[in-house]
Image 1 (spheres, one colour):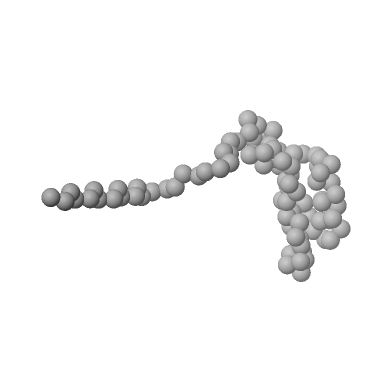
Image 2 (image 1 turned 60 degrees about the vertical axis):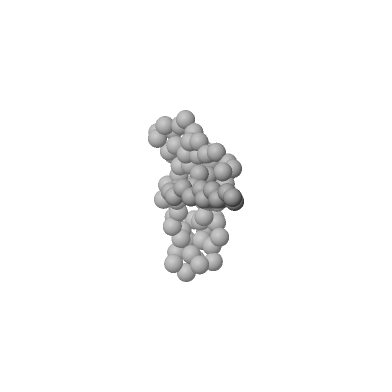
Length: 88
């Protein structure tokens, strides 16, 4: 007599596990993530923003790689043409 084939295992539902780069936050505290003075990497970018009529709203270090970043606001007619949002 022929044997029956086993039923295929059902796939588990839920979130998929990320493969590849393992992200881990830095050990910096909230006070250490705040940048009060502009580092050299941001000085040129902030100069461009202010020259175009924008304003720098804040500076910080992003928590995953501790790279310096800044929040800025550009004039409405400049937003569509600007491609500088972050310095990585």
